[in-house]
Length: 247
Image (cartoon, rainbow, N blue to C red):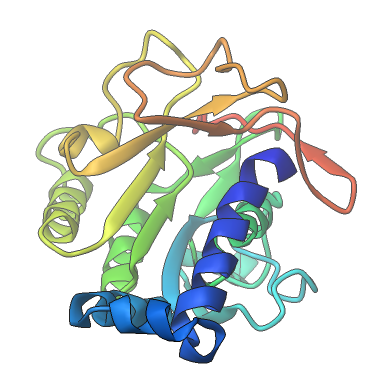
């Protein structure tokens, strides 16, 4: 993970150091900075809000160092209480946040917790479709710059309330100035899945690679990018592998 994230992190930090602070630039460099450049550089000073929609984020993790905003939960479990956004159900959200901040140190994480249940065998989480639309709505209300959905579900049944509401909010998100990323499924034969299937041209589809940088042999097809996802060292000697199988 460090090999992947360090060049991106160094580029970000160098850009901010050399250009956001004019005192660090030579007079000639400062003169060459145009109005358009100043507008771009001004935007670099703003927080990048990343809405992380999945199983929660352990915001007490020292890695975050105040790099999060108050989150939201839709994990209402009836008599079993409420799963809070600041507790990760299986550490996936926490590790995602840690990796995002390695690559994008200027980001602030907005944790949105979906309603989930352990799958048979307890290795994965099953997402309750009814929590997806309100979670994306919450990200849009927060004016998130990025919406990260590190999961995939089968296409909702046509004509159902869940399908209509999910389609409506994804359509709205596609009309906004927001970047959306979602996972590719771990079944190569599964080519149609949500959220990406609703509007393939507006949602980045991310597949997993292993620790050698090679695409995972179960990673889905038609991916836009391949990112670390198998045997990932997320820090503190934690090595993780994740499946995007929702069942």
